[in-house]
Image (cartoon, rainbow, N blue to C red):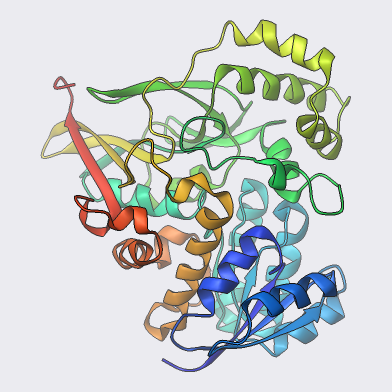
Amino acid sequence: MSAMKILALGGPGAMGAVAVRVAAGLPGVTEIVVADRRLEAAEGLVRRLGGGGTAMRPAKVDVTDDAALRAVLRDADVVLNTVGPYYRFGMTVLSAAIATGTHYLDICDDWEPTQRMLGLDDEARAAGVCAVVGMGASPGMSNLLAARAVEQLDQVRDLYTAWPVDVPGDSGQDDEQLVDPDGRPGAAVAHWMEQISGKVAVVSAGRLVHRQPLQPVFLTLSETCSGTAYTVGHPEPVTLHSSFRPTRNAANLMVVTPGTLAYLDVLRRDIDAGRLTNETAAADLAKPSTSRALRATVRAMRLKGPGSLPPFFAAATGTRGGRPVTVLARLAEAPGTPGLIDNMAEATGIPLALGLAQLVDHSRRRPGVHPPETVIDPGRFFHDLVRHVPALARDGAAPGGVTIEVTEAGRR
């Protein structure tokens, strides 16, 4: 395992800061450059986290300045890119990383740039660059949970991943994610508005298609686990369709209460009608308007809720030994107790750093542009995750921090 210099683009952000903290403790990581368009923010993170065995220094970098971006990339072995939204900046940073021969990981949660970045696979292979796109919570952990679910099947029919918005165990948008320190809507919520509007990628009848988001999907996963979740535009349907070839349906879902879903649907309609942009919709979500709240109240009465669905999971249906089965894969966290998914920054930043841990290992570093499920070892990932998340290591927790529940059709 050779010494590696890491560039953390957007490191001072909530998710980037967690990734830097964890990465600083990884074997083989000798230096981390914390880069941001606000030098004082980078300096602040270095002051908070520096002083350990890993050298750390700040840098001022604007990713829209191609020359400056390439200059700092040339001095790094791997870049951790947490600069969003990715529908604006993902291709910019990955293209520069390939040009400078720098290995790459990000937390891209937009499906459109994910497709475009995967299209750079030939260029990355030619440059000897290993790039992992979407190594956060969703996508990222969700993809690896899906991989664990698919392992139980001979044939995959349906494949769903889901994350929480405002239900118990919520890792969704809190006030810090809605508004940046400078008072502007955060990149995470601007991304959210992008992915609840227009058309999003889902799999239907085994084909990747584009459909209106916020569509209900009723799931019965076991005798005690059923409810309705709603489609949203994340990359999982794009990559899982390619990796596992579900023959029927696949989608990324929000586990969300009817009241919040109704307000999102009001925002969706206004974005699609041109009355709001992603940024103005994000600002409205941070400070809901009375008129939209009234419109949402009427809609909420007609919507179904999440029932007993877990907040964060992957679910696959298919056959095993000729029998139809449903497989539910989720983190082994006790319901009602604080865990990883209660903190969006931790739930996203830790997986990013643990993905880096596998790229530090030369045996996992395969040139090309990859989704997490094709290059990150799920068993090793969840084993490493347990060491960083105490809730997954509690007495009686499932080995490896993941609960797998297999239910045969007719036995629910």
